[in-house]
Amino acid sequence: MLRTSCIYLTLRFVHFLYVLLVSITTWCQRRNWQAPQPLTALRSKLPSHLCLVLVADNKGCETEIETAFLRCLQRVATWCRQLGIKTLTAYDRDGTHVSWIKRGASTLFVREDVSAVEEHPDDSCESEVEYPLTPPLSEPSLSRNQSPDRVKVPVSLDIVTMHGSATRSHKRRNVAVRPKGECAVVSSTSGKLTLHFASRASGKPAIASASRSLLENYVRRSIMSGVTPNGVDYSLDSNELRPVLEGALPQPDFMIVHHVNGLKIPYPPFELHGFPPWQITLTEFHRTHPTDMQAPGLLESTSLCTLISETAFCRALDEYAGAQFRLGK
Image (cartoon, rainbow, N blue to C red; front, side, top):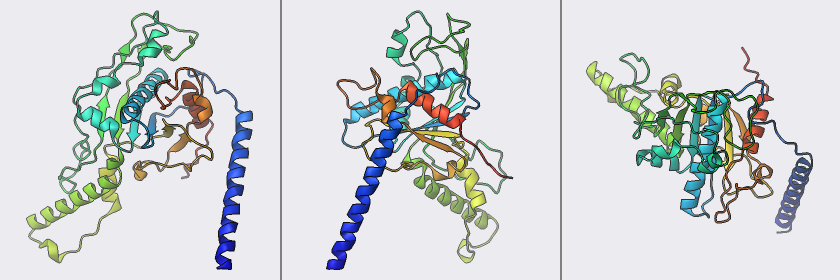
């Protein structure tokens, strides 16, 4: 009994030291916090495929969380088009984005943030990107040139892809100095942006769906060749499974995790929140910091949800630009 009590007190003491260390480190970081480079600043590299992971706890109002997710996605999509980032993946664990698209609400993602546009009425900042109203689910098994031995059974990865077309802004043609606010135009042409929407169903459940499809395809080939499937052992090959899983969702270069309900000290460990793990072998990670969210208009008086700020987005890009990649031979 005494030994158990000593172990318990020791663990409590170690936990207290850990919390104290994290708090002191966070305080020092806030003291030395420097503003990031502007959005249009020249950086050594930019991700060609950005992934935005939106996280919310279960304590908030569902409607407020959905609205916050939508506005965060609109902001990030606007910045990606300005910077020429070609691909953006929006992920949330519960599949809020996927359900919107399946309900035919894709027009919500087309227009820019209204509040940001109204700040500069003289600038035509809206990128009228034309997306299909009812985009089909991605079919990785049909998007590649596959041999007859490949998978022919449909695989449900629960990933929606929307392709946008490059459009021109109407008024401003050449902008030398970026105006203040969120809606600056970098060039006369807005870049083409491809949107992927994924959820937890695109992770482990997708592995089960792909494995089941491979097995059904194997059984069908065995029957056609006159071999009884029950008499032959089937071994799932990772080289055969990987193209099926990676076909619908390309691997992101950079992942930004944003908590719309904020983070409390001590900050929890970094999590993927069910994001497909096979898609992040060469992905850099970043989590937005609460200090970068302390800006007017980001925390609405009627909502406890915090939108991702341009400062947080720029800080993430600075971190990615400063990262070193050692891919090996």
